[in-house]
Length: 255
Ligand SMILES: C[S@@+](CC[C@H](N)C(=O)[O-])C[C@H]1O[C@@H](n2cnc3c(N)ncnc32)[C@H](O)[C@@H]1O
Image 1 (cartoon, protein in one colour):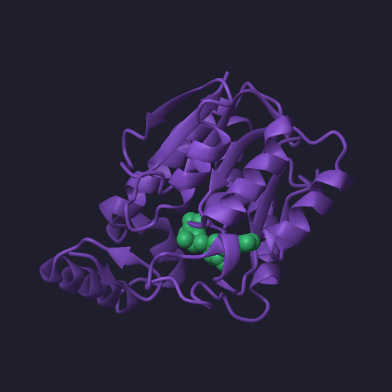
Image 2 (spheres, protein in one colour; image 1 turned 180 degrees about the vertical axis):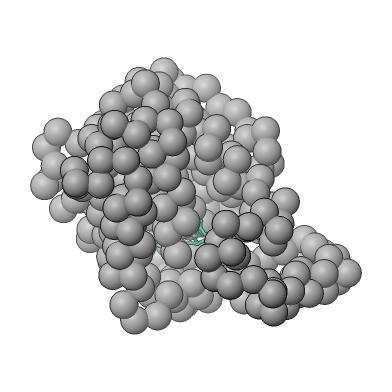
């Protein structure tokens, strides 16, 4: 049975949800200071969250030998973007040309009519609203991580792009005439914006680049699947596979 959490739909049992609540309580009440908590995240991170990070790490390893940016469509709190800056620091610490751009309205979903219509009651207007000033907070976080990683004095040119991608993405591309894409995450759950982003970036994707969909075959969130069928299947030469660690994540590799 599907249940609605604060920002997500879950297939977990009541017992699992209760255990999750207890884990968050244990995190909140841990006899560790903030520095110890950060260094001991393995005490608290759930297997599902760890699986997701491992999946992103697998993806990053595949693009190390490619030129091009990492684009995160529907970044929400920005975890893919921050994770990729740190994976960059691990796998290619001296490549400061790997730019990361995180896109979101930061006001959650809006105007669920027309081609962006959500066929799901769990995704209402304003769901995933990050509150005032979050884009700046994410910029700050990215800069902090860059400052901790190798070559902090060389700016990486990462960007947090705030607004509906229908407005922001064409401008982003126009301003970067040499933009190449090595890796793009699609996690907006909606057909309209996903199709739009695909149309815009496909001409900039290098051979071997990865297009990653978080919900490609979820029946209750069909938008990404519709966009894949419309824009990629039968139109673009590619391979497709599923993540080994995070089952809902599907990876399209352009040939
Ligand atoms: C499922 S959440 C993303 C979760 C996030 N990728 C993560 O890793 O935790 C979907 C996000 O897509 C964003 N979004 C939906 N439509 C959008 C649009 N047209 N332009 C920009 N962002 C959009 C929402 O604001 C929301 O934050």
